[in-house]
Length: 254
Ligand code: ADP
Ligand code: MG
Figure (cartoon, rainbow, N blue to C red):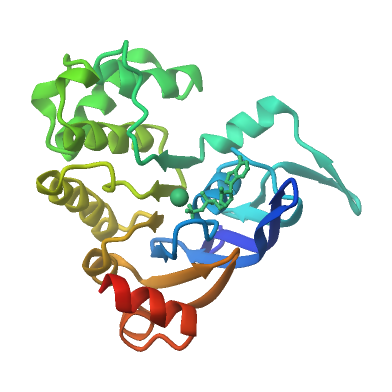
């Protein structure tokens, strides 16, 4: 076991001629929260997607809890992992999307049981019990049999968080988890993430909620144009940004 859960080194990613990630290095220590900030188009979502192997990097490497992702080492050579191995590795990373992405045809409970069942994590009975525990944790015990369309956006996002936890991931990635929500529903979702932070969940959270970032993040990471231009404790990066792009961005949003 290493005390760095997510180790990102020299990641490059282009889409055609567009260089979206241009050498990203990021370490997230076990039990810590990194808040990832930066202007639209700076590459934040792409970075999360590479960490969760929804995209493959062109260059660089990533380990999750010490395990190289996407590749197998044999001697000095790297071989791409087969899809089955990639899927296993992906279950170690929880992803919470801006738009919830629940399965619309499944109940809340079924949404929580389906993925771990497919990953053969445990017998169905055990997963059902776990699902009820997770629903209680996000304050939705009474919604087990509801369908996603019957829930508010805030409730759906809390289900999505519970679903991400159901696989017992080593790290949780959040991509602007509250930006699709009506303002009055933002806090109930941030409260859940706050509780997870207190419980020592390792997380990377892309957010525009600066006060939230200040409160929960151990490290604030500022990205601009495909690179991390500044990172450090919230009090340093948010209050005394050094990089001109970080300064300009923060003066607009704070
Ligand atoms: P952010 O999340 O910081 O707003 P993104 O990572 O979503 O930034 O996008 C960075 C850049 O990469 C943007 O210019 C975006 O249009 C482009 N991009 C993202 N995904 C793709 C893709 N699949 N194909 C082509 N361009 C993409
Ligand atoms: Mg994005």
